[in-house]
Length: 380
Image (cartoon, rainbow, N blue to C red; front, side, top):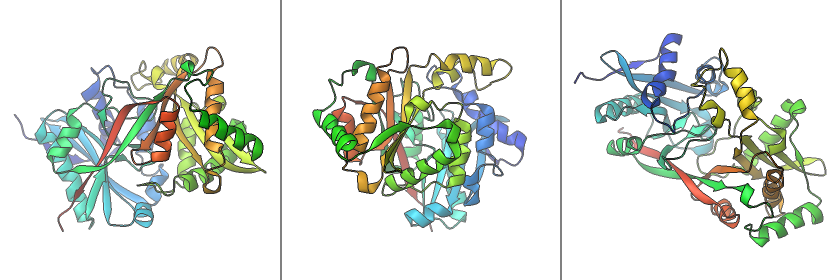
């Protein structure tokens, strides 16, 4: 068998080749959902993605006999250094054929690049941060990924572990089928009691996000997001520019009925961003919106019946005021509307986040996917 060569990405044509690697590897896997090529190109564009205002990255493609057989990125982030400390690098966008030689060559390229930057440790995958798609799937291979979730075959985890990487953290996805909970019969009574306290006794109101005020809503959501998640493992506050960049891509997906703000005396104290699982539609488009993909996408959105609770958080001073419980019940109420979304997945949630995991148990949830972040010390 021919040897593996690793090539850095230098041109836009090579970047598109990088983006298309998983299409070549996974096109016959029924669970894999092709991303939109133009969106991935924009996300990886150093001149467009505001991540590169505080970070740098190298992209690598593995080739054998001129054909792409894998890819990986390596990156360093000033904001990670600022908020997480240490001297870390990250790797991301890992894809590989089922061949130990290819996986090793890719991981070696990433670790060598990280070492050249004076880093002491490398962890990942992160595409590019914990605010983006993260982790290697280690449970739930049989399930199709939801919006903004990666899917990987089982050999990815074993390939990474075989190269000296160890577990850093697991992230879990909980399934909640609200269609079976219209009366809340499986919700723990304490959730109803907490919501009652928050909404009535504390004077907290929950409203839908307003697309017509998208810029202002983005800022309000960012304030909640950065405070609510600030103490979490691996969290780096997201910048206004990064949120606006992501919001532009998600505007066509956002459904106001499933995005909520909790307010008290005019201050936003909690938020929940839930997205319809448009992967149900994208699975039929093959990564292309032209020539007829847009029409299929717009028509298909109406039939989506699952969602992903992407983010749900409450500011510190209101964590015990019933705001989170009120946001949970708001999802239940919306799911009771006939003909719409009836359930989905929540997360990811850190395996160490006991309050959130207990809340999912209290709502009758079930862990259906698990992603793992790996780390490895680098030789000095």
